[in-house]
Length: 276
Image 1: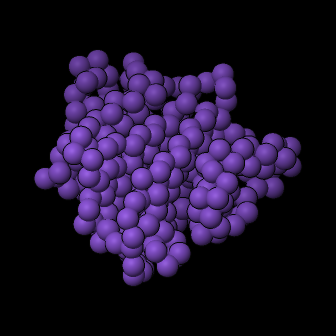
Image 2 (image 1 turned 30 degrees about the vertical axis):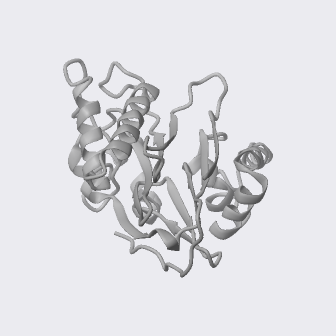
């Protein structure tokens, strides 16, 4: 197995709110990838004494440990337990009912000799490449499907669509959101490589339209994760003034890319998941 991981803050003066991890069991068979994108809270606070990096470090650590050690658990069960474990760490000091209590998007994959399992919650992305070269994106596009009018202000988002039916879901303090994730599994021989990335890195495709998901996978596999993040930074800087692509979004976002090439031959093709 070969891995390539880059995680970079959007602003060097601020902590990176993303989390990335690759886990390998002691037995040497299988492994996992965990990528989280912490949600930056509004300036008026989130009812919590802790930072978003504090939250993503604990949630990401719990997910990595449980995914590697909990072979008898499904990925939604693992996410639910990791959320519950993280919530317990600060339930005594913080208001976990606040709509902006620390939270994150999730892209999670686990593979064994027989199976590749996946889970995606909110707008991080997971790309799977089959042995025939086909790239299948696993996406939770509920946020992207919402009308712009529903996202006009933080207050409107929090009151009407954040972690609400008909809106979108993130991993915060409620373990039940694990059941809302996009999940599934495919035979191991149908996946040759995978790439997980936060939306800050996915801007190459989703914001700047430099290429589709297959083209993004190709450049990461050929040029490396560092190349993708550097190119996104160039595109962000070029659009800093006119904002033809960035619009109201932040100029630079935290960007994380994890690329894994799985060992062993594969055959066949997989046509992808169904959106929730």
